[in-house]
Image (cartoon, rainbow, N blue to C red):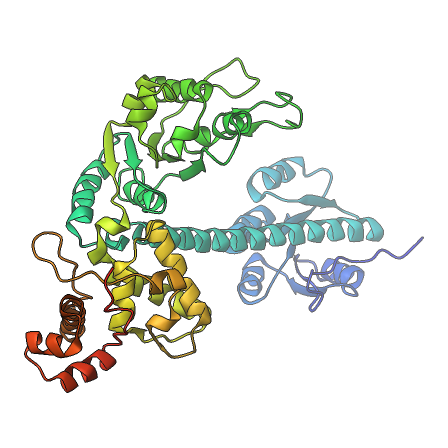
Amino acid sequence: MSEIQGARPSDDIRPYGILIVDDEPAILESLEFTLGAEYRILTAQTGEEGLEILDQEEIALVISDQVMPGMSGVEFLEKVIERNPRAVRMILTGYADVSSLVRAINEGRIYRYIPKPWEPDELRINVRRALESFELISQNTRLTADLEDANERLRAENLYLRREVEGRYSFTEIIGDSPAMQRVFDVTQKVAETDATVLLAGETGTGKDLVARAIHYSGPRKDQRFVAQNCAALPDTLLESELFGHKRGAFTGAHADKKGLFEVADGGTIFLDEVAETEPGMQVRLLRVLQDGEIRPLGSSETINVDVRVVAATNRDLRREVEEGRFREDLYYRLRVVEITLPALCERRQDIPALAHHFLDKVSPRMGRKLAGFTNAAMDRLVAHDWRGNVRELENEIERIAALAGLEETIGVEMLSERIRGAKPSAVQSGADVVPLTDWDLNRSVDGLKRRMIIEAVRRDGSKTRAAERLGIPRQSLQKMMKRLEISDDDVKGG
């Protein structure tokens, strides 16, 4: 017969501890002889002695006699449960002692009983299986603890990320002090507190996605999902599956059921960008969601109720799209419960300096740069440019500048793109359309005003001498000032 190998702990450093309690020294000696080669054996002749050992040693298995003077085996095992509930419990008993055995099973929760007399090999097998059970329970306990720790860390990380996202997409993170943007903020902050459907209108690159997220993360649904879909990015057949989902076999390639974004966003917000690009069939399905809160996945005959806030966006004139028959009028009115038009960047020029510095601070660390800012001349060019791509174009320009700049450098006119360098700073004006100061730094703002006044004076008089007379300064001072402010001959040409 092959040798019966004992169980070993998973770390295989120290053998399992087995506590044997019996009032007969001969039985203790026999059990220790049978098991001692494989395990660390500790013995006691009374339950009280056994409990003392249990408090001091790491015990994986307890073997106790049932009939002992003083504390019985069942009473002892009950106390073992209180002190070391993970320890496996076995009891020594005679076949005739049925009532004690039943009590031990019910109250001592024993793993197995060992009949007297026992077969050594059978005893070794039972002990090995008991300790394998102990090891499995121990591993499960450790895994459960590790899982709970991981879940706790995940909950903390999710809370941190949620707060970070809420902060990143709050209205305070949208740059804009111009009257046009303040009007936008007044409306969006009010509508964010409601569940109203919102239609965001404006040119490409004006920040409709950022405003949509700010509405969500500032509202009552901020703890739920925000999902976005550009309706122009997919043909209607794929867009329908993306938004409403599909059942397995609904079309070629549909190998499994798929939830649509409306179902994914249930309880939260869905952002439908470029909604004007949808075809009439898709517009009907969108109308049904807005009217009834129901969707039907492709290939399914059953509808699903969803509770989703809809924020839509378009760079087209939807009113004209309706008049020309390209967009459903009923859907248009469903979408524009609240309509917010985001101004083009050329309509909020006074925000350009703050936006430029914001993007520079954002991109410089990523590019490994420590850029000091912009010269007055460079900022004047940025303010004067038309920015047909709006904020997105400005951000791309600043990223390009940072990528090509030195490690520590102030951004001058020569570092701007050619199309930006060609922008002519506007002349000083009066009234509501005054080109704003460069920023809120007094010295920089004064330099910006000086620069515009000099350019306007030279343009009007066609001569630096006459311009100096008009400005009340010597011609030599004018030339030095033009050099310091980086005013070139091209700057003072008309046009």
